[in-house]
Image (cartoon, rainbow over all chains, first blue to last red; front, side, top):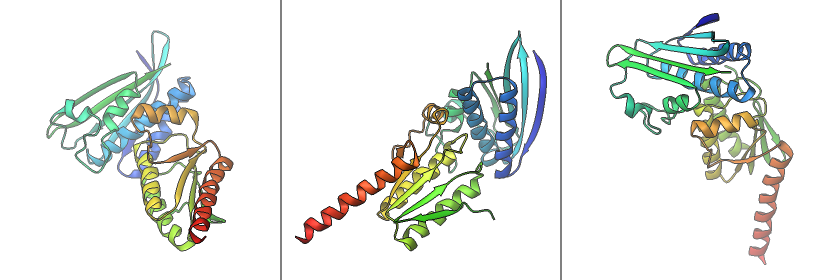
Length: 134
Length: 129
């Protein structure tokens, strides 16, 4: 796997959520994703950026344009040093929320991506990686 | 702070969202619209989202809230101009905006609001007879 382009965005305020969407859009265009696929991955990025902000207490995202075996795609790695998630299975269910949201963020982001992985431990923060391929 | 302009158009309010909305802007719009419905005695709210490249759960919830509040204040909300890719993504995200009326464009949205106005006016006439 090679990374052709990358951009790191700090997520500290709701303006940064907009910045994450813009970074995802630029790289999704670069990866040659279709309009629907672009829309899906940008929406997923927006959900995860807001999770990072609201539940993780802020963090960052690394947006990468990657190529594997001639296939281009967009990979986004969200990291925070927040309280972490005790039960990931439960957190992925639609309608589950520990805050003020609708509980669609994690499950929705998973459905909108081709690849999804999450690592989290209580007290040690959360890392979510999603990818969408052309 | 930035605000999204709300135009009065007959007895309807027209909002055209032309910027990539951050969350505070969305919350401010919700508040502004609510007071404007009362001030303008509006019977309909038309929200044009044709410029929006994405609608995530936060903006979706804002649209749902606006529709619910305006219904209580006796005004109809119609969301118009949603891009096809946005519609596909919203459904996959798990948001079907069940409380929100939609129309393909501003013209059809206005027609929806006017249709409801004429029906309720003729009902009033019937009551007077």
